[in-house]
Length: 326
Image (cartoon, rainbow, N blue to C red):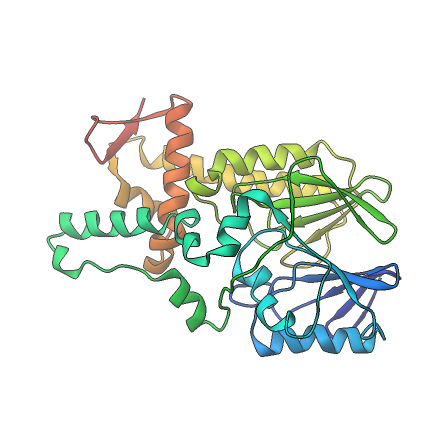
């Protein structure tokens, strides 16, 4: 593997266009394949000018500028992965725009992302907490799309023409990928596996950080099920959407699982001495108020649902907002 500025050469026909940082609101990694006489992408990153210019600069350096775009494969419909489509489609005409069928609704109507992000739950929990603190007059409604826009990573409308589901095959040049539906972070999140090369395009499932998860996107149970799917594969190289290439797949999967399950332990420890409210448990998990709102609220809700399903935690009463050990 070799590197030149933002280009990381994985193989002769597969390159990574890497952003300056793996952290939001920077672009996700963009992977570009030589695909016959053309090129194909796995994710395209943010719509910020710098992110789009990085793609065109990389294609120029690779001398792939004149190649037509065959496929744009999108791991899921979040702005740091797909936001550049609005600008790119003024310059390219891909034959196929590929996305899991579940995430197509969010691509066609970005306002619906508020539901997969569980922003109504966040707003309701914030209002309930302020009401309990006698500050209900400060009721605030969070605008997710406006938030994206304010960080220069806006979401655009995308019209995929090639929906996929679990088990579908996607051929890209000399690669034959199998689609794995890996929800948790997004309802229609996909990872792609190439068995002959033992290669996994992981999206946000595994990478520099553990991606957040919400009940409406599959929750912690969906995320752990997705990790189990991937753990059963023979993988030598993981290409994540955030961070560097991963050469020890088993270790990365194990560490991701452990970080997620550690939140179960924090909740259990917090409940050992006395019942706790949702707000108190949220503060035990996350120390920053902005993180407590999002993704703190949906992450905690996901873990409480899991622990209740497992019979380890229960509510004090049907209408109670206090939780205790079962």
